[in-house]
Image (cartoon, rainbow over all chains, first blue to last red; front, side):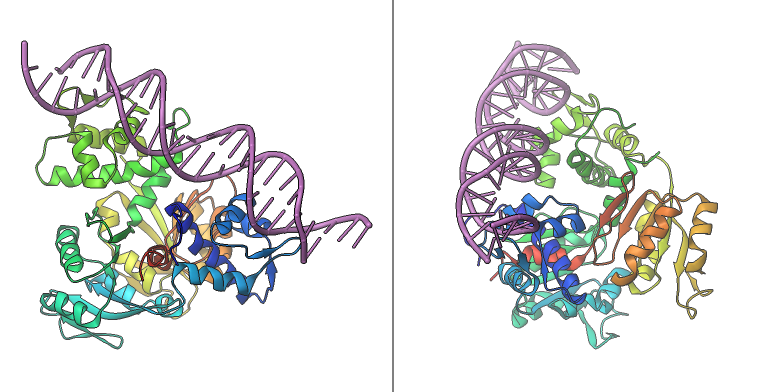
Length: 206
Length: 206
DNA sequence: TAGATTGTTAATCGATTAACAATC
DNA sequence: TAGATTGTTAATCGATTAACAATC
């Protein structure tokens, strides 16, 4: 559903809107407004309406947005009205926590393959999955047709792993290694480095 | 060192620059340029120079930037030339992984207190730390004078925990719960939700 | 109807980039 | 010196906000 040229910064806000809408649904709410959503999220009402208007007209003057309807629309836009299978590379502390995290299944991401290069880990299990030998990574990913990967290997190995993933056809990488990954155009990367987030806040502290 | 009014978006890039510089140091490099740094990070050289110029003149025409010197300057700016003690709330899978993650100590963040509200966990240990009773959270945080916290509790409890943390004097919260936190002005919040990052990428996939 | 809220336009605001003199 | 790269200015580009007609 990637129509016109929507700014990436708008795409980046949609999952935030979605998460908040789903929470409202859980609370049993039926209707919300750009103002209420904005207050919850610390975003201006005008911005929310502008963002949504890029994709269509989802609200009703005078009443606002039907939560279930808008939620569904945003899931359509984001392409998450389906299950995405995910490959996880690196079964250390972070990788293991990711493998056990229920939030992925609940929200449409299914970890399908887990790799590590440590002989002591290969063959052992995390939950229902057997840790596979990283040397078989490209082959297994291609065979399964997985497009999304998470990387939780040491920084020194991350770029090499990313190169292999790209080679194997991965199109989206969520990188937990504290290093910038360079990938070709057409492959998306998102970085999660808690220290970067912390350092961004300490600037304001004394 | 929070001088003029530096845009927060600039502050947000500094930890990225710093991480890359520290990697170059590890590689034994002495000097870099805005161009090289930009290529590594996918940021324009002009932007990097502009960002840095907000804080002073750190380079030399014709040669570029001394890596060790610039690295030190950025750490000064970000206020990370010191160790920040951190309180961790929630000792589930994510919290436990965070508690064991070495990257924090290595980069100046020391987890000092760990809390949970599960009687089966209270008193048990993660590494060198004993999990404390969450009912003592405010008191212990105040006593220790900790200003930074990480929250890895279920979504339903996160806002309540945040309120208590603010009450206890916490000024910066790194939130792993998949919910937006509302805090008063003067308290900083950063959110890490892997699903949000994944959903931001699936928009571009088919 | 009166009140509320949308979708959209135009104005404002802020961030990025291009270009270049200064100079190492 | 010639070549390279900074710091900075001005121009461009893009994002946010304010305002309001439309209408539920």
